[in-house]
Image (cartoon, rainbow, N blue to C red):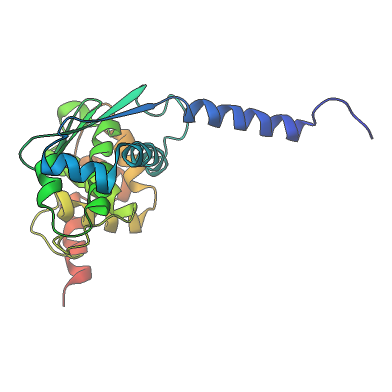
Length: 231
Ligand SMILES: [Zn+2]
C-alpha cells in the first residue's frame, strides 16, 4: 500500500532522533588555557589542546549520563555550559559547580602519557558536575569514589599503576580508587547499582541505600568484597 504519510515506525524514529539531537545540543563546552607561556600551559597546547579537551568534556558527559542512566532530559541536572580552565594551581584539578579547573603545573610535571592522564582526570571532574551529593549528606569518600568509578568504567584508570588493586583498602568510604573498586564490586551484584545509588542521592543520603539496593549493609558488602579477593 502506498502511503504519503510517514509510517508510525518512521515517525517514532524521527521523534527519537529529534529528542537525541536536543539532548546533544543542550550543553556547551568552553575551554580556556589561562596558563599560556608557562611550561604546563604550553605543554597543554602542544600535547592536549583546547579542541581535544572540548571533545573529551562532551564525551564524558555522554558517558556519565549513560552510566547514571540519565539519558533523558529531566533525569540529569539542568546545565547548559561546562567550563574547562587550565590554570596555575596546586594539586591536580578541582570542580566548583560547572567549572573544571586543571593544574598547569600538574601537566608540566606529569611523567608519561599526559594526554591520556588528563583525559582520565576530566572524566573524574566531569562526574562531579553531574553526580548528586545527597544534598551534602554523602561523605566525600563516596563522592570521590563515584568519580573514580566513572573514570574506571570509561577505561581511564591511571597507566602508572598507582591505584589500589581490587580488594585493597581498609574502608569502603576511604574514597577515590578504593571506593571505586568497591563500587565496581557492587556493580557486579547489580549492573545498575551505581546509577540507582546516584539517583537516590538526589534527595539525601543514608547508608541504608546499600541495604535497599543490594539487601546487605554496606559493612557486610565490604567484608564480602574483601573476602572475595582474599588469598
Ligand atoms: Zn574529585
